[in-house]
Image (cartoon, rainbow, N blue to C red; front, side):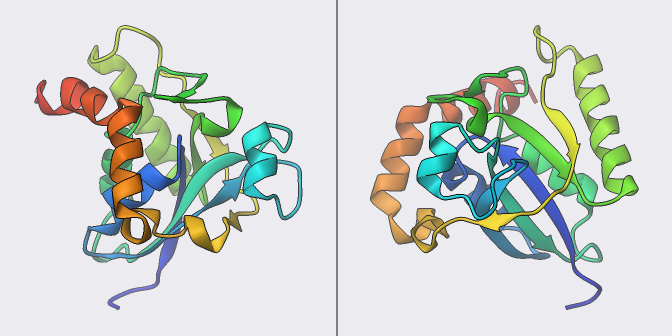
Length: 178
């Protein structure tokens, strides 16, 4: 460890699909699936999925800013989501699957707003960017079976991700337009 660790918290639809893209970078120490932004204490997966808790499925990333900058983490985040979809992400629908950046300090808030504004001004998307930028609140880790799901349940993860439409969207909107 080269510096003091910080946290970044993002909602990008199904948290299973949001762990691996961050997990593979130097400077990322931990990626935890969980719930944030709602009103219920200690929510369960079943309660969040029903939509009655106000929580987003999210990931909380512990990172070393001396190794990987928050701006780089934001770039990775934007490339995992459809920032124009306010009804969920890909085949996962409902409020708990919406996108949001939860900032932990004013620098994160400003960086998130700058990247969202730059993305909106880029013309990459024909619809408005609807990803919310919200203050971080209590983060509740999801149940153990959700943690590192892409490693523990590799075949099911790959099948679910393939059916979601996420990879096709990423290829169309990011990889083919670069």
